[in-house]
Structures are given as structure tokens and as C-alpha cells.
Amino acid sequence: MAALGILECDVLYDDLIGDYVSYGVMLSELLASIDPNLNFTFYQIHDGELPSAGECDAYLLTGSKTGVYDTDHWIQPLMEWVREAHSRKERMLGICFGHQLLAHALGGHAGLSNKGWGVGNHMTEIDHRPMWLNDDQPAYQLIYSHKDQVSALPEGARRLAGSDFCQ
Image 1 (cartoon, rainbow, N blue to C red):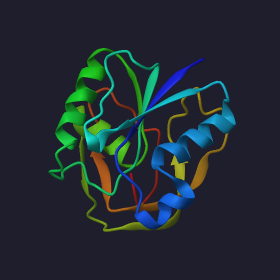
Image 2 (cartoon, helix red, strand yellow):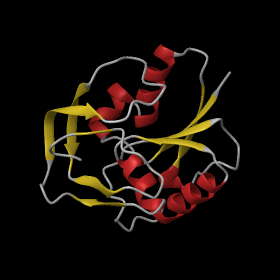
Image 3 (cartoon, one colour):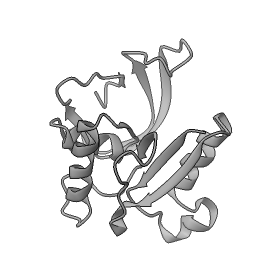
Image 4 (cartoon, rainbow, N blue to C red):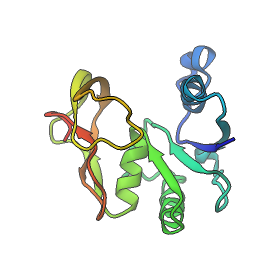
């Protein structure tokens, strides 16, 4: 059974917790519906919980209302953890804030978009199809709600998808 560590980078607004519990729970329910053999371990990053080396087979960094450039006490330790995990060749995937933090921690840049807020449905075109994306769709319509973007990839990184609004 594969172990996936979910690094929860925020808590939901109080009025959403009753329906959705947490970012990690929403993602684990989605992923378990695809592969019921996954085993999840949750880490509350904002409370200082970080995995030990090799604790899980892969890690997923969630979204957050915070920006990677903010000074919250947990952001720098998470960036250090990402650098160390990357040096150990640990598998990591970030969603929203999570992918911005991965890029930023590994030498790229994430920050405020010069286009302002991205809100609504946007067509996002696939540039590079990873082997785990097992269909042939050239684009997906995704819901956007962000003001930050990755503006420079780390060395060796490859852009998988983007849109006119968010490269």
C-alpha cells in the first residue's frame, strides 16, 4: 500500500470546516476514489509538523491563503524541508500554493502576478504530458482563484501546463 504524506499548508475558513474538514481531507477523498489502496498521513505544517526523511512514498503540498513570500513562521522551515527532501530525491507534488512553494524553494520564483487576481474558469493547455496523465486531452478547464504565480521555474523543472493568464 502506497503511503502519501499530505502536507496541509493552511486551515479552511471556519464556515467551511463543517462541510469540507480540511484541504488534506478533500484531497485524500479525491485520491482514494481513484486508488483505494493509498494510505494517507497528514502533517499540519502551520503547527510545525514536518515528515522525517523517507516517512512516506511521496508528498503532496496543499494550497494556502498565504503567499510563499509571506513571513509566517512555518514557511521557511517548509522551504528548508523541501530542499532537503529534494536532495534525497523524495517525490513531491504541489497544488496551488504547494507548487508555488516547490518552485520558489528550489530556485525558481513565485510572487504576485502583474495581471492581478485570476478568478473563474480558464482553459489550461497541456505542454508536457507526464506519464501519470493518462488521457489525450489537449487542455482542461480549471477553476482559478489566485493572485500569485510561478514566474520562473527552478533549474531542471519542466512546465506541464499553462494558460494565457497564468503561464
